[in-house]
Amino acid sequence: MQKSIGICDTTLRDGEQMPGVVFSPREKVRLAEKIADFGCDTIELMPSVSDSEMRVTRRICKMGLNAEITASTMMRKDHVQIALDCGVDSVTLFSPISDLHMRCSGGISREANITRSAEMVDYCREQGLKVNFAGSDAARADRGYLMDFMRAIERKVKYFLPCDTLGSLTPFETYSFIREIKEHCRCKIALHGHNDFGMATANTIAGLHAGADAFSGTFCGIGERAGNVPIEEVCAALKYIYDIDLGLRYRMTGDICRMVEKFSGMRMQAHKPLVGKNAFSHESGIHVDAILKDTETYEVFDPSDIGMERKLVFGKHNGKAILRHMFKGKITEGNVSGVMDRVKRISEAEKRSLSRSEVMKILRGVENGRTGIPDI
Image (cartoon, rainbow, N blue to C red; front, side, top):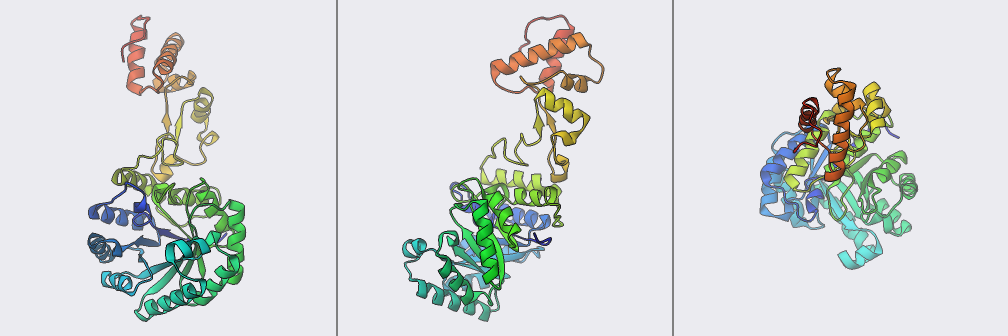
């Protein structure tokens, strides 16, 4: 796997295509600042969507961010002109590659698709734009046709993105797919995958193993249908599993994901890897006891490294270690048993965890000799 891997953020374009998600211009500006500060190489927008989108793209282009601003652009010269007017650094053209998508989405033949794409790449370059090219549904395309398509544009584009548009590849298939492309293509390859089968992160890692130069994704994995590749998951896996540090500001991870959650209105599942509220929460007595002795027993890295916090949770599955730790020798063993009994009973009855203040209230009741469960 390469030690230098490009990151194209499409939170503000593909991420916003998630049903129900609309970022305001102000929110897009704030997210763009954060994404650039985190260290993403490219930020993708789509100014042709609306006048408002065109204005916010123009504004972001003038902010002097340490990231390339690219415009996702249809195969139309007037849309290229919109991108030019906004002052973007590059365009990311896209066209269908599979026969199904050419028939149903583009209404175009194989030969005409290659000719049109090559001509549009030339046109964009004549306008002084750098060009990336996204092959829609490339994962399900005829491989011979895909290679012919890439050969027609490979010397003229910065990145070719073979899209797994339906997230239907497996990690093993992704590896073989990217290896084959790398053997035949002269330009750099950037992965763009979706998460329809929950394999987006694994597929991206497999594609990077196969030699891909970059990947495209969104923070929190938001996007159409089941979403896109979560940038935070891939970056953390590279750093903490593969020892590939991309020089990112990893501590911003939690902050960016919380901002995406707030602005998008899409609440993260509690067990979302890395950034969900339970990602570094521990309740089981065995786990808590071990964590208190050595955090590496159940954490690969310190959660603060990515802007998250470790939480020891009070509930049905606790052992006594959590109470001894909480009260630091200021509680008798008899009271430990009394408090723990009540914590477990409340947790079971109400099907939830308890807060620290609730446990303190239980302790006061036990110390004062009250035998019932307090009203908390």
